[in-house]
Length: 439
Image (cartoon, rainbow, N blue to C red; front, side, top):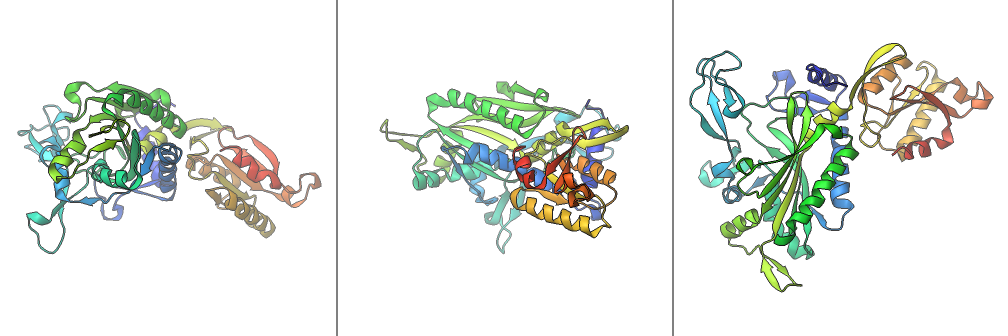
């Protein structure tokens, strides 16, 4: 559907109503830049992460998984350049005293029309203390990215597993940024999740591996179900790249609020390992047995924000159409991404024999297929609409014919397709295989 201006409004409403995403700390008025994932949101996010992990880690022989600590020695962030340079330009309205990122506003305050004061740099890292005494030696930061945990564990992975170049270290984890103006639902938040790889290569092989990862990223988005025609690749010019990057491509998505970054692919050279070598005094060079030399590998980094992928997928999946003469809105997830794959209904909830049979079929399916739901709340039409909004691809209805009222249809059920509304009878004994074939 056309991404009109109120699409975000509709999505936020649907996400709350159907248990995908809630405002953080809502009963206390909320906390800007924080969101809580409800049951279906957790399932959707896990599907996105699981596919990424399977594609980039499990199915490959050159990737190693990691789950680094969120809190790290403060020297890590000094060496990486975050303490001295991880900042956004901030300005404050002299009239209403609201603060904004200076590069995202004009000459007047968008809220009250007042003038802005001078621009100053604002470090986005959250600072905290560890231990009993609050002094500078106890200062630590909530990590603003997951990448540094990979770099400081590079030597551990090499010593433990002796990998051959090229190889990658991947992790999924929380990161935190004290955004000046969090906005646009899940897009710009203060607490988020990243899926990142640091792929270590020989210096003269970075271009080949960069191109391979570029194609893998595009293939991943197709598998997730993000509308591929809404993704564009921006070759980031030198003046806009991070200081450590020699080449960066931003994969941008056409969100309703504009074309914004969904994923980054950066060639970080040997910057990070060199910085940590100098600051820690540890030798982080790699010994190449074939060439008989030691050198610091170069790095290619694919970095995806999980929350931004969730938002892009919700936008891609949101569909409005007319079915049976009624307008409806539903989430057109593919089978692999759908939080609920199959919903099982008794035709009537006040008929114990139907409920009992439906429960039996539900429990049997649940053993074989992930994410099966039982639903007997409301009439059958309302249940279909509810499952449509959740994005459930198939609904299974147990009726009196299933029980043998029509002997020819005994032990069959009705399967209803979310997208078309079409229905077909399938034998109970063939249900599991029917859905496995859809995966």
